[in-house]
Image (cartoon, rainbow, N blue to C red; front, side):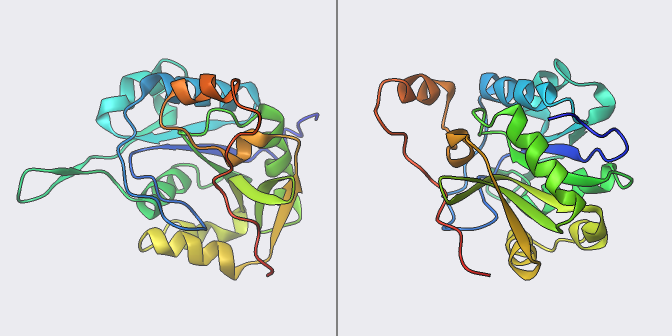
Length: 215
């Protein structure tokens, strides 16, 4: 796919911690601490030739800056609970920070950092679909997956997401378009790169994303 430089949404890679999602059952929150996995995901994003912005926490800042310019890394602080535990930023806060840093983008394609198997062509396809749709998402074999794209018209709502459920409500509220791609990586989030190596040893990778609902 040839890129149109006049219409060039930004890929926002979420590497700030909690493993929430836009739709489907929530996973238990966990801290992304695999720098190698972030590196693999970022390489896929950079290969798309779209602008890339990383939203992360101090622990992965250096890893992000190894592949993208310092101006393209947004570092969110972790908060500390009274018992001393650290809490990573939530999904809504991460998206709002990324979108707010690139307010003039043609749109935003949100890619979780724990999905290093998503192909560059998929990122471009989801981005280009934002020309005519408010919300887009990758779809493989009829199953809804990631990344998810948001058109520029949703800026004011994206930068004011109140919490993680706000992102899911936004996806449900606007007509969305599934972009068919030949990319099973859109369905797979990984605990580590070791999982990616194991996928080559099994006949059928497990799909984590649910089938798309009727809107």
